[in-house]
Length: 374
Image (cartoon, rainbow, N blue to C red; front, side):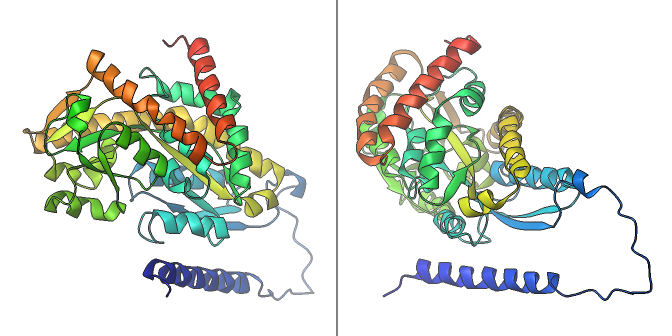
């Protein structure tokens, strides 16, 4: 028997495909030409044009309107439109408009939509190597976004990641810093012992589950849209997300404690269907890669400013919320437990697991050395 999610996905494919065929059919209608009129002079030299025909595409975002992925997807769409003099037209669909996070990754893999912007956990269901970004205590507390940009521009990690993505018909365009993950809870978490039995919602990722099991918690994957009711009804004790999501999804309304252990950076991965990408002119492909590499730092600045505003707004709305930052010996106890789970990645991370793990560790260390980060 076909499950509801599969029926919904098939429905989305039929609707989107029909719409694209209708658009294509309209575009192919012939325009009558007055044979008595002389040919008009071209507005510009065709050799100077970025594209010689209009390209239309769709991008499905994992996040709602106004949140990081959708905002930066819109920025990319605007840039490509301007850069191509209106010849590259990209429509962005926020969370919920084309299905949940798993649906939109499948749609991109099938080529029903050309782009998807999602996190490492959801895409990890298709490309297990992406789960390397869910390993705890990889990134430095100091300026992790600068380290991430260095990795994108100079490291070996992205080549291995692309090889892995291409195996599944996809191409990663960059990795993006979306802030540190915060643990919110209905009771305080100050030491790793406080994690024992903590029923925490995480993204659907076997690797993330291993990480939180190592900390003593009881990780529970749950759809993004169901988290609020799960917290409100006590089905789960807490959840993990960056601050912008905690505010935009109103999780803070039903949680009293915010804890930062500096274990996990939330990594977004803008992704494109491989067949579509390879069909684009080389100049367009290069513009994709350069724009997303150039966006890492300004996007990090944007999200850091947003997080300051979000935290202040949540504390103003609910002054009883307690913010806890775990440091020193207490943090070392978290690290010791968390590192045990890294071994599981070599079994779960796909055929390139060892290669991408070693490359990322090496890239991060080189970046820190060049950037003067401890």
